[in-house]
Length: 391
Image (cartoon, rainbow, N blue to C red; front, side):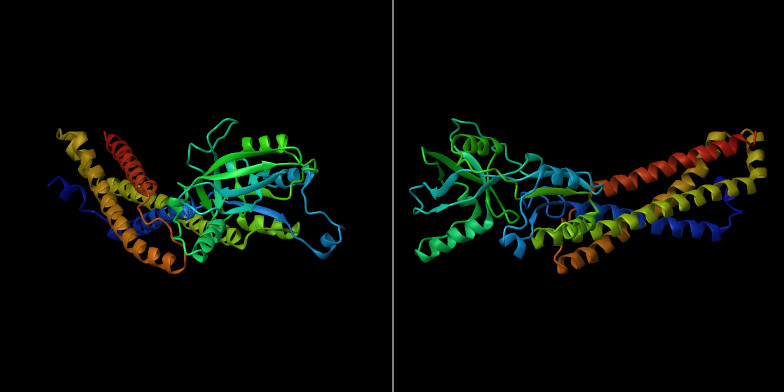
């Protein structure tokens, strides 16, 4: 009876416009937040390098071959790159300045030995989840991150010898060893694989092991920085690529493709997110204004109810419940439409080679709940203020 009295003078046209705006805004808000998070997580954990990080070196030209130009980086160059607004950090990649070989040391695996090139990078650039990534003199083994190409080469060798090939997990159980040497001494150090990467072509070791080898078995040659690691800002990876071209730097094509793809898709969803937030805000504002208009049109009925002793909180509850139900229905429809969009978008990303995580983003759901609570709070305050104004 109360609802029939309070909501008889409605302008449904304005209500429908606000509902449609809220529905579209909520749908695209959830969608954009979900995929913005998933795209930024793409590749995370599958590679050793941290997000938006590339290893670069200077391009080799004819003048380099004639010793007219250098391919190593100076401290001033590294500082200049680091000061660029779209760069988060730049760190040198340290290489071995001593002779080192790598071989199998396991009775279950045939002997395989080769001279190798080892490197180390600042730990902040590595997405390593293992607690084993540390070393000090006297430890049982050196943890290493192996380039996947090396495992392919090892399996090719074993196949040629008619020996069963090994998987990633089995390779982590095999014992290896380094041979460190110079003209005056030699040392053997056990090693174990803790991870693999497609992004680095050398074996990665902890900084402490590299410092130990370079100090104890140095060849005496000048130490040069020939590679650096660059971490770019999210959604600004195109600027990193422009910088590389401008300064004659290069990196693996796969690193640039992933970075460029994430930057473009991330920017697209950021734009959609901005539009969605504006749409939800405006539609919520229109609904609040519609509530105020409805209360002003029913001012006589509200005053009459108050004069005859009708509790104000019941009138406030009627307006509050009515609009919260409307927004709740709109939110539910928006969430349902998001799942429909998600089905097609996941299939589209997969066919395009972007294998993102398909689990629902908790942040997107939390954002929806937060929007609902915020609208409910604004509705209650508006209803309370409008009703008590009639006293």
